[in-house]
Length: 272
Image (tube, rainbow, N blue to C red; front, side, top):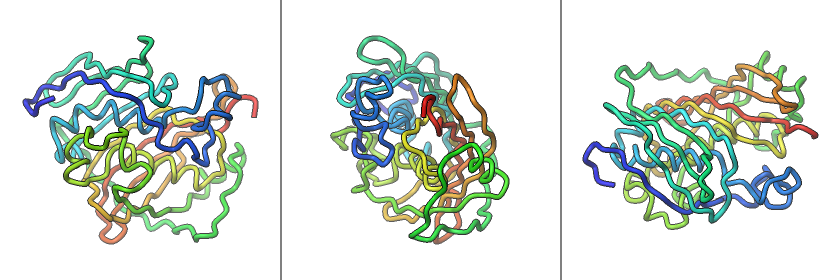
């Protein structure tokens, strides 16, 4: 894909970076117990595949201004071939589908640089969790308490050696903003929203479903990133318990807002 303003289809091989994650839905044993063929590739990694065309065309500009709405509708498995098909494009953005090796759509995305970028959120100053903080179990009652009383903030450090430091096995195949310039890639950036949620409520297993993310600044190497979370809604669908949360990411040392992420997840699967 060339930087000629056109977003192009691409294909790759899925990479499950975290088969030994605390969220055991990414491991084969638990995933198979829930009827999947094996451990699920993280939803944030699927999202990175759909955002990849924008990162290639826009580079750092996407990391400073870009918006992405990604919905994960079906599992993608480690080492499974996939292709990202641009279904429409105009102006500064596109819509795309991620297609599995069997031809079924796994996820959809709308990605663009807004004409009017919204104002970045300001840091609230939420209490940062202590190292020995033990989150409560993710029950409906405890989730409502988080919604009413607020959540803990958590801090993460970006570096290329992080387990989410690449969204492809061969990191040189990532967009150059990530591989050459060293900025945090979408699987890490969106991953923080997962980690802040799961650090506030003990969930295992659970499933990432959807994000709306607005970027405000690129995350450089070795940056400390603080995530503040608000639980916006809780609901049940088809026996699953869902949570909608907003997680804002800030430079721990300077308070610059890196991104604002609206996350939807199943925090309690049917039958648990």
